[in-house]
Length: 85
Image (tube, rainbow, N blue to C red):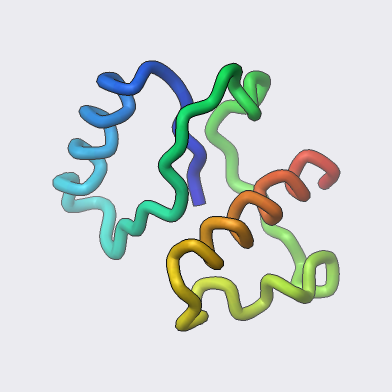
C-alpha cells in the first residue's frame, strides 16, 4: 500500500506512470481526495511487516469483496495505525 501526496497534476502523472509500469500489477486506487496539508509529511518509502495479531481486523483486507469506499476507509485506518508501529 502506498500513500502519494502532493500537487494534483504531479500526483496524476505519477499515478499514470505507476499504472503503466510493468513492475506493478493490480494497481487499485482506494482514496482520491484533496487535503489541506499532508497527512504523512515525515514518511518516506519503507516496507513494514505488520503481524496479523497487531491488526486482526485487516487480515482479509486484500482479499475482501468490499466496495472501494469501504476499502478506502479501511486503508486510511490501516495507514494511520502504521504511525504507531
